Image (cartoon, rainbow, N blue to C red; front, side, top):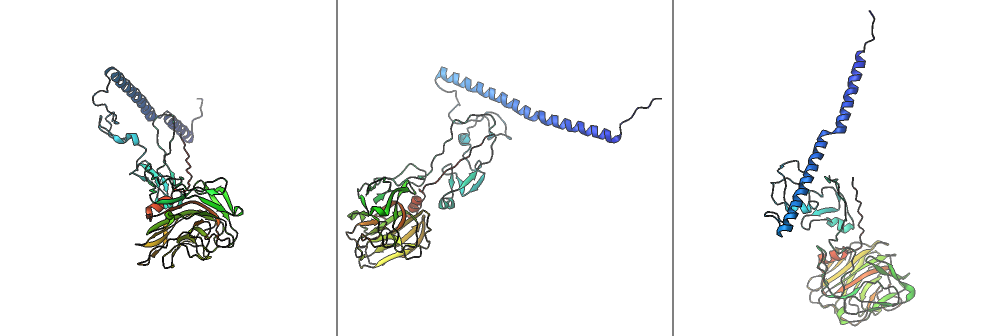
Length: 415
């Protein structure tokens, strides 16, 4: 009898395993569940198109929609689970379909100094993000269900970021937050001049200023909001400055606020002046001054009373060279003198009881303390100088600081 070679048990097992692997690969490739889903989705899409066409024909014929059809989003179908968007009772109204991307659940990606605000329906910076000036958010991936073309992507400003303060005492109303109330604004210098020696006041009061010593200043320099004015005073004995003539509007009665963005190239220049009302070298007509203190790199806000006494508050936060910093000083004779650095209060001094703020007729100096050529000039840039005849609130000063220029970068991907 003729003998034939047989398969070994190992060979049989290998063949069976190979067949199983091929079967799994074929099953995965075919993916019947996905095929069924795609088939059902295609049928649903055709049904929806037929319904939409019928509604359109009805509206053309009758001049109105069928009973029960409104501008609200409505559920079609009876599914109670496993829906891509939101399950519901057939025919029920679901108001949030049109804002399906604007929900706390949708914005459940990775946050860093950002948060979703249900009150305004937008992604925003947290308070820490507003202080640091930036934040990031990485969205999760979503199933688009079907192919679609993106016609446009719109990013709406929720607050007046990267915008100068409003001109002519006008107050903003068009933003969800951060609208600035410019009531009481007596001087507003955007410092966007390109040439010449005249700097224009945008408060509506026409308190225009004049620049002195053209060897000690530069126009059209990089600013925090648009462009800035840069002083190149190399020591405390140089005094390039912007001078605004006296006007009674610049005198404080019982309240006042002085603010500016500054970027110093040298923080060691003691008593360098940023904004000062008063011009005489002996300081006998000084009314108020936002300036540096000694060589400690700390800014101060000083208000002189009618006895000639200096009432100044020193910031607990020092300034850093080469960095833009927002400074504000406020005074209220029924309360205190305060200084703010980057929107945060950094010092306070109770106003002495029974005293009033000195009023005089000296000019206002920007970038120096006096009109003399040997008194405390600053070295660096200054931008967006604003003077108010009222005490701004903490929230107003925070909003003013948050107007500073920010970059928004978005990366959009689709698969």
